Length: 233
Image (cartoon, rainbow, N blue to C red; front, side):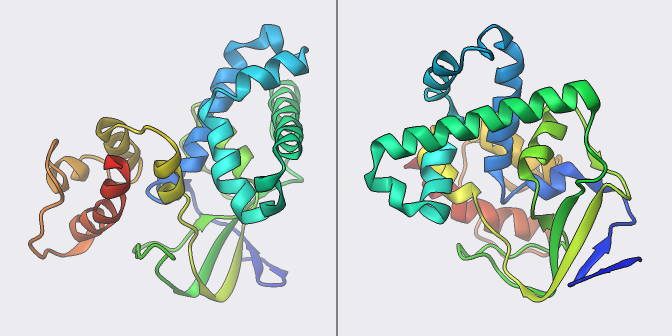
C-alpha cells in the first residue's frame, strides 16, 4: 500500500458504497436523492432564486439545517437570513458539481478520503460496527456516485486516512429526527449494507428481538434498537 504521508495511503481494494453509507450515513442518501432531484429539474438550474426556493422543501434542506448547521455553522441557528444564504451557496455548489461530473467525469486529481483507525470506537450514539472504512472528505461526490448508479469505489479513486483511535460519525440519528422516514424506507437503507439479513433481524412491524445473538445479526439489531425509537418519534 503506497503511503502518502500524514497517515494517508491509497486504497487498493474495491469498497462497497452501500457499506460506507449504511447504517451511519443516511445524510449521504439524502444528498444522493437531491442530485437525482436536480437532474429532474434541469429547467430551473439556471434560475438560482427559483431553484433555491424549491430546494427548501426538499430533505436536502433538512440535512443542511439539522446536521450541517449544528455541527459546523452553529451561529446560523439564530440567523435565519444567514442560514438561507449559506444554504443557497450549498445548492449552487451542488449544481456546479453535478454539471462538472456530467461534462468531464470525476476529477482523478480529487480522490475521496475514507477514514479508519487502529482502534474503531463506538459512535457517540452507541453504535459499534465491525468494519474498517468510513466516509471522510468528499461525501457529496460519494452521494453523486450513488445517484449515478455506481455501487463500488475502485482502487486508486480514494485514499485512506488512518488515526490511532477513530470514532465514526453517526449522521443517521439526526436525520431520523429531522425527516419523516418510514419503517420500510429505513429497512431499505439498512439493506444497502446488510442485505437480506435485515428481514431476519427485523421482521416488519416488530421491534428488534431482545434475545442475544452473534455477528452481523446482533449488529443489525443493536443499530436498529438505537434508530427505531427516533423513527417512531
